[in-house]
Amino acid sequence: MKSIGVRTPATVANLGSGFDLIGLAIAQTADEIIVKPNDRKELSILEITGDDGKLPKAAEENTCTVAIQSLLNAVSTVQGFDISIHKKVGFKSGLGSSASSAVAGVVAVNELLGSPFTKTELIRFALDGEYVASRGYHADNVAPCMLGGITFVQSTQPLNVISLPFPQQMHLVVLYQPVSISTAEARELLPKEYERKKVIQQTSNFGALITGLFTQQNSMIKEGLNDLIATPYRKQLIPHFDTLQQIAIHSGAIGFNISGSGPSVFAWCESEIQANEVQTQWNNYMELNEASFTIYSSTINGIGAEII
Ligand code: HSE
Image 1: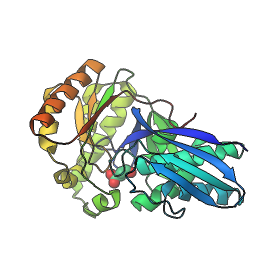
Image 2: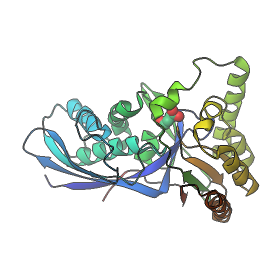
Image 3: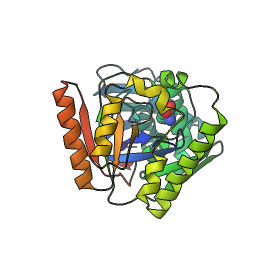
């Protein structure tokens, strides 16, 4: 068996009302890993770059190797692998970094084992990896990272993932600020129960999001990008949240919200021109406030994980 490289995209989960259920892959940024079989019957992370030394190298702690082990258990093999991980998706950025490592690992090993599983089947192994980082079985980053596009995870047990259509001209502008937010901690902030009124409004927004994507009506997508069950409790963790939202909407974005559990935020734009305007205005505001930030303006990645 030779070595193999896999590239995986960053992802934006939740998309407002699709908390834990919907996510999309962006084209702008990606992780890469190289996996090579070894004769030691062990999973070994040789190096991790781009993480500032923050990610664990122990096989039982890294989402990549935990996911690979889950796959190896399923095929009952003790084959070992050496892994090099090159992170471009920021750790704790809200852009699906842990999912990205997990997906890359299982796609690479699956290929080296002669592809016993389809990409969709591999999602359940990647989810086992994602669990060590977020302590929850939600595939809203894993599914779009694996398959590309926009995915709706209707159920994780049994796994049922639906790829949704999306407007081809749409762009996402993503703004990241270096504030550390762990998904597990951000989940602790959320109430355990919600008022009926909120549940009904959230269900309405979610219906609007799905309808808007299928019928390509931006007015419906706009409603769907509003969230009542996570954003109100998490937005205080994100500096400049309200102003960034106002600027995005004033600049013509269809909607704005937190990417996953943050701190990244996104503006959903109907075209590249609109995205450029949001990017310029956000840039001006953040520079004026001497804030530290990175902006990605991106189309949707329709491919997901790919062998390189
Ligand atoms: N949906 C998750 C959350 C994050 O918002 O806590 C991404 O899986």
